[in-house]
Image: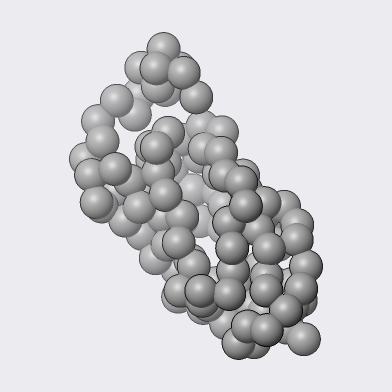
Length: 106
């Protein structure tokens, strides 16, 4: 996102707290790479996404606008299966967590 787009979007204030509303898809299997999207509110263009399971690797990520983050992730073949938290953190350090939002299956 360009700085001019940031100013137009109304999210010039880095101190807002992001809100996660949905993650799609919400599950996948070990050893796969695929696209994942996060919908919500107040995503800053330099927001960061973190998964509580270190076996999920973010290969590429783009904050499309204040309501949509697109990314490509890879789930390592030898990682723990089960549910993991998804966290979005704005540059101010304010963040939002959805506990158990993503499920890794065999």
